[in-house]
Amino acid sequence: MIDNTTQEIKKAVLCGVMLDREQGFPERMKELEGLAEACGFSCVGMTTQRLSALENATYIGSGKIEELKELLEAEEADTVIFLGSLTPSQLNNLCSDLEVEVLDKTDLILRIFGERARTAEARMQVEYARLQYMLPRLRGLRKNLSRQGGTGGSMSNKGSGEKQIELDRRVIEKRMSDLRKRLEQLESGRQTQRKRRAGSGLPLVSLAGYTNAGKSTLLNQMIERFGADGQKKVEQKDMLFVTLDTSTRRISPRDHRDFLLSDTVGFIDDLPHDLIKAFRSTLSEISSSDLILHVTDCSDEEHLRHMEVTRETLREIEASDIPVIYVMNKADRVYPLESLPMIMGDRIFMSASEGIGLEELCGMIASKLYGDLISCELLIPYTDTAADHFVTVHAEVEHKEYTSEGVRVSCRIGRRYLKRIKDHIIL
Ligand SMILES: Nc1nc2c(ncn2[C@@H]2O[C@H](COP(=O)(O)OP(=O)(O)OP(=O)(O)O)[C@@H](O)[C@H]2O)c(=O)[nH]1
Ligand SMILES: [Mg+2]
Image (tube, rainbow, N blue to C red; front, side):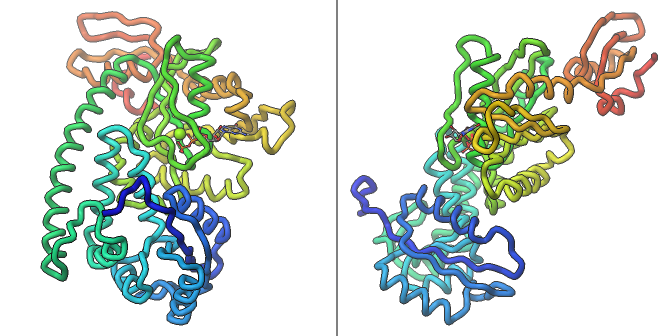
């Protein structure tokens, strides 16, 4: 049995394929190294190959496999980590050919999430995604397992061969169905919470962006500057995927109306699809918000790619129609402090850690949330409680009167919400 506390650091070799016209390949390899180190591997070698298409059976070409074997032997490494995601058959074939433990980027991300998950919900979501990843890959993973000395995860190690794989499959499917049920229960709790929050009448602003961009730092600074006394701060650290759970706090800027600010899990290139699905409920916080603060580390050479990944992930969670403010964070590393903050349209170059640009950001949030408000009079019949609720949440209500025909409301409401209440507008 391997004891985790005394387990020595494993030596890994990284392997990546650069496809034709691919941008940012060296940076993606560097990011893979960071992920591997976050998982406790020491990267002792790296090999890359240029291909016009990935090899169906083995990801890399046969010549490269031989080269990789030599490198593994020379460096005495016991693990190979591939950039990207290996198909089940690629994993299985590579495990047989290379005779060492074989991982891919998806596996690394799942491991990091597994280690960082604190709450019961996050732990269940990660376990579900991990099992979903394992299910079609049992053959290859079983070979990995035997090379690790026979411990690991949900896979038992008694017996071998197809029969055992079938048994593992059944155990995993049963566990997944249990997890799904428990997650659904938690999801209904979350909806109740959301309803209660909607009842508070405050708009929800979400922080979204690449991991390590400074989202939690920004939330903490907002709490410190504009939060109610005693509001708990969230964890911020120079590490990937520090935040896995959602935290929401009430922010009361000096010159503007209050709003709720919500911090959640960061994104990364190749974020496993199964993980996004498993985290759908946590991420739904973003898709149900009124405004998104898209936070980027603008001092990172790769920040344009990071922004594209964030946009893509927002599309995937159906949040791409929500208005956005681009927070170009860590600008203190790029521009002289006295030139900050800089506002260009819906972008603000600022520094969360230095507390520069917070007031200006609050101004931008207020004008995005309320800037295009239109005054109107509504008469909402008592039967349409949903419309009444909608107005309470999304409009600035100036006057409300209960008449014999229904609720008469004078309010100011964002242009984009007009469609929802158009049947009740009387003035
Ligand atoms: N120089 C500089 N560093 C910053 C700034 N904002 C945040 N940081 C640092 O960046 C690191 C990551 O910050 P976090 O706030 O934890 O990042 P995050 O986006 O919440 O990351 P995840 O939760 O992992 O997705 C920390 O070490 C912060 O101190 C900034 O404006 N300037
Ligand atoms: Mg965070």
